Amino acid sequence: MESYEAKQRMNTILTHIVLIIMSFIMLVPFAWMILTALKTNQESISVNPFYILPHNGWHWENFGTVWKSYNFITLYKNTLLMIFWRVVCACLTATMAGYAFGRLKFPGKNALFSLVLIQMMVPAQIFIIPQYLMVSNMGMLNTMFGLVFPGMVTAFGTYLLKTGYEGLPKNLEEAAMIDGCNIGQRFTRIMMPLTRSSMVSLGIFTAVFAFKDLMWPMIVCTNAQTTTLSAGLAKMQGQYGSEYPTMMAAATLAVLPMVIIYVIFQKQFVEGIATSGGKL
Amino acid sequence: MKKKMTEAEKREARWAYLFVAPTIIGLLILNFYPIFNTVYQSFCKTGDFGKGNVFVGLANYSKVLAAGETWQSLWNTIKYALIEVPFGIVIALILAVLLNKKIAGRSFYRTIFFLPMVCAPAAVAMVWKWLYNTQFGLLNNIFHSKIAWISDPKIAWISIGIIGVWSIIGYNMVLFISGLQEIPGDYYEAASIDGANGLRQFFSITVPLLSPTTFFIVQTRIIGALTIFDLMFMVMDKTNVALPKVQSIVYLFYQYSFTNGNKGYGATIVMVLLVFIMALTWILQQAEKKIVYHA
Image (spheres, rainbow over the protein chains, first blue to last red):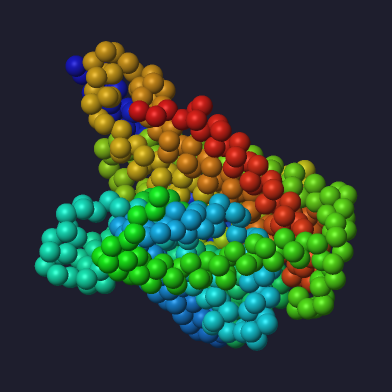
């Protein structure tokens, strides 16, 4: 049986080699981003000889400079607030609607649910011009309300939570009904806490989606004081595109918060994305 | 014959309407009114801030459909999808199969592959743009080449596609892993006893039983790839000579609607995209019945 074990070991080694090469490819852009961010402008464009590591000292102060000159504190605050409001709105509206669609009987249910399905089928670009015009007509350009606006309700989340509620056993509610709870109490006390994992999935999905979105903040918040990290980066690139260490420091600062949160809560992230299967 | 509702049923219905009201009202205002409004605007010449719409009939459509730019952008988008979708899926599937074995450092690898999914595409695109830089970029330095990765029209679409693949591998992989975990382990044991080797097992067990997952990923990725915008917008400067051969249909929509302020024309481009995606969705649903293996 020795040949079998040797073969197994060979397999494992080959697997690791493939995975390590792939990890390397995935990490190089991140490594280069951080290394460039630590160089001087001159150094970043000195090709020959070619240095990987900064050789004139590690210029950590680049981060401080970018932080101050581009108002990162404002960008962070705007992004965080937008994510917060979108997650709150999405979870709240979707859990209510998901419960009704998943557990209650009412006339017109199928017709109303078809609205949810249709919204999920059409490409989101079709909503953008009228949504922009609405925000603009309300005089809400360059406001937090404008940023949150398209994410106030979620068809995808409603669908996700409906599936979550449908998966719960039927007799749970019957017991509560006998105890004299009305539907509102059944929902808040028994059913909603049981769909926590779906809610977490939706929350993570909503947060990542909002964090990554570029076009919407770019069109509703043209002002550097009111915009988000993504749109802020686009603005910076337009102005200072050839100062590579500056740009890379900015990119690092923009991805860092979400990367840290992801590394801490990676189990929830990966499961959330895998179970929701939403289009990011 | 409609039954009369009992008091309890009426009460249940009232609660239900209360619960769905925020979502339904929101969808009507935020999504359904916009659908009709976009259709309407595509027949209009748009004044500033949507005011003073002048009905122009099919004028926008004849302009959009006659413009070579529209078809070129649609073709660019398809070319991007032809790189991102198959490569993003095949590489992800290989990684998922490798990570589905009991192997040291599984979650470590998974964390790394999934990393681009939590990064803003705007930042990712900036980093790749720097890697692709013709004079000072890392790639040309490593390969001692002078390739104009993003300004040569013949290459730029591939370069953008590579960023797309790099960004999406981890996401597809995670979906594949959860699909793989639903395949019962005894199938593989039985196959091993019958003498089927790893490759044979992959094609006879994994591929058919994974087909619902695969199909789901293919479908969402095709739609996702066809609405690509961020990468093109961040990587391609407006002065880039390769831009016409790379810009996607959504990029074109953005340019007309928000840079040039011609919302009627932009709305018409979205209608072209809508028809295209709806047709494709229909084709995919027909294909699902034939391709996907339902156990």
